[in-house]
Length: 304
Figure 1: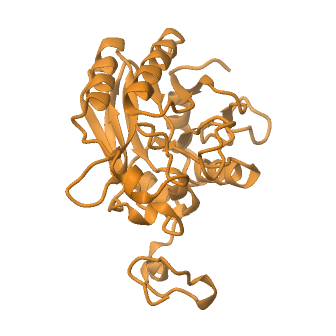
Figure 2: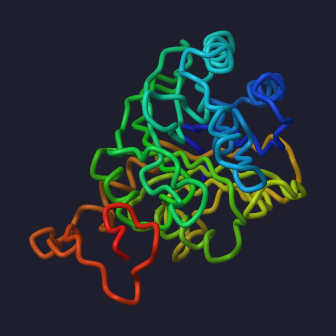
């Protein structure tokens, strides 16, 4: 079956180079390659401005590497999006008046900021407890050469909470971007497959490549694109929703999914919002934490 509205996402599975300036140069080169290969959108790994180098140094050292949204790193990539006529998902340790945030800024093909998302589920069992948490899961309408597409984001650990993708689906997201910095082993890959399947949503995840010992937990590549379409006419039974799975090596990986097929699928199948029973879900918003799940470091529950 031929694509009727192909949408291409470039996963920039890049190693970090030790500074925002060096990382910017590498990101620019990768974006240019992505555009030459037909990408509509390019996505960087989590917190690429400083390479997610949180575990090997004291917190005061890496917290000092936070940069503002009007930094040269961000402005240059926004200008590049305009030059290339391609959306770019820029990731950074964002400087704020409070503690820094783990942030994704999505610029459209005109270099205009369309989505600003900060990680909601920070890894408070580790160095991310020093960060300011995001407070919502916004969805934007992204102007692309293929028309508008509704895009949201979750960052790494957000993936492990089904509520993240569910809220994005309820907000209208057709594509969820997931900057990442952790080992993408079979269970985490299964999480992404499940989030795409149950929400009938495309999910693009960009991880760091293998072989960077300073990054903890160790990354291993395996960036992925799932299109969220499990059943469709022309396919026998269910189909594989995984459009692309990268290897461990550094590189620019471009995957394409059929946006029109996804939209037609969402109008006919029964996952996502079709038969939900929200009147039964009140316990999901309660603050009670079962004893076996209590951990030190949980914000708002410091007595644990």
